[in-house]
Image 1 (spheres, rainbow, N blue to C red):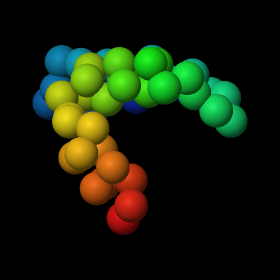
Image 2 (image 1 turned 60 degrees about the vertical axis):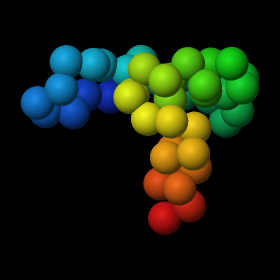
Image 3 (image 1 turned 60 degrees about the horizontal axis):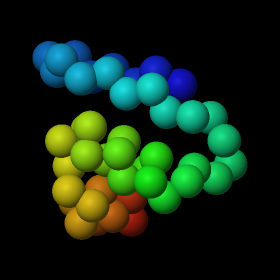
Image 4 (image 1 turned 30 degrees about the horizontal axis):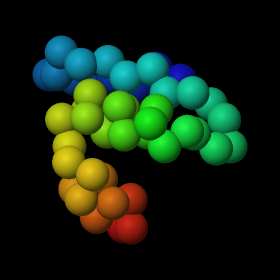
Length: 45
């Protein structure tokens, strides 16, 4: 999946798998400009 947010230069290519390796997930979080803590807080909403 390709995720794009208007007004931002970053485009994320996210694997469409049931599970994502921890290193891949951390890399995607880092690329999004979020901290792991911010991601976890948003994921819980």
